[in-house]
Image: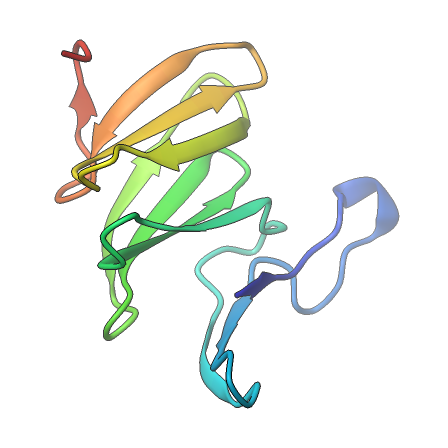
Length: 117
């Protein structure tokens, strides 16, 4: 997977907010999408391999790794996402913002989890 975009101060590009997925064995293009108009800042596969997460500014798009359809959109209201990862069972997404806020979301519907257990 590869995400595209540049910071606003550099002018960006026509590919801002796009990502591509390639077949690792021969580098053929498998999928291309543009869920955002802002630079992609992170891409992750879930441990189960069922989901991919695409971060862009304050949003994370959770998509199926089979058909690449967006299943949920996670919104961090206060600040840009600085880091994110999946739980070991792929049921939850943990995000950290530039304001150092740690938040958990369900990968099935994108809803915020009140407390991590």
